[in-house]
Length: 279
Image (tube, rainbow, N blue to C red; front, side, top):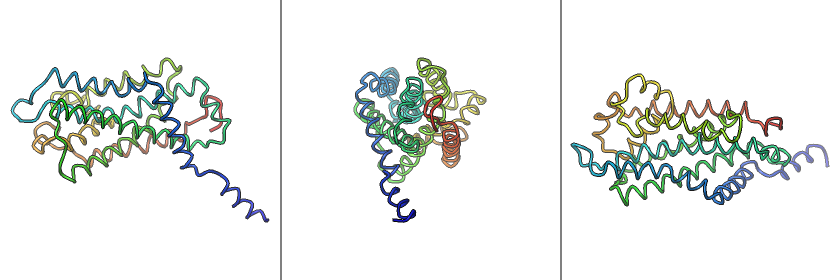
């Protein structure tokens, strides 16, 4: 057998990185489900926001027949999608970096690409689960009406998918920031909560000072929230409540894609198997 045949045989013997990534994702999900406190916090926080705002401001929006729940649900879904990556994923990776999990993985044949694929898939599954729970509660308790038009669901699909990718790669890129595992949650949660309040998740964008809207417009949450409102709110809300009278889906797509590309570049450049592990 010549060297070319040996090379091809060894390539066939190596597991496919994507298949390994999906296997890693399954392991990640099993570990996540077993950590019941983590599941409760991840799913419970956005649900708590929906319940609090839906119950406190129960009824319909002034001057319309749209329920308060219909207004709050899209923004909270957007926040949940982004939180799945830049809070949950980043925190879990920061903890793994500091508790030695990544250094132990460095001793296995698992390639970095498969590890990252596993994290992205887990983020997607987590975001889907959070969205399903929020919609189910919204429909059951707060008169949230699901879209009936196909084009709205297509909009939901690309906004959701692009949002998950951006959130996941941003989370991977941000994971090295915390100096200790204990500080990880605070490092990611505090600025994210602030971003929620200036991005139109809870407050109508027109009520937010223009300079804060400008700051929010740099980040993906503002555009993810607008995209979700384009799916779940009546058409007349676009001109009534959105800055500039438009959801600006094209700009939103560009911003989300830009953050996804930037996050990917930073994640690839900075990823290490632990502080001193192999790349």
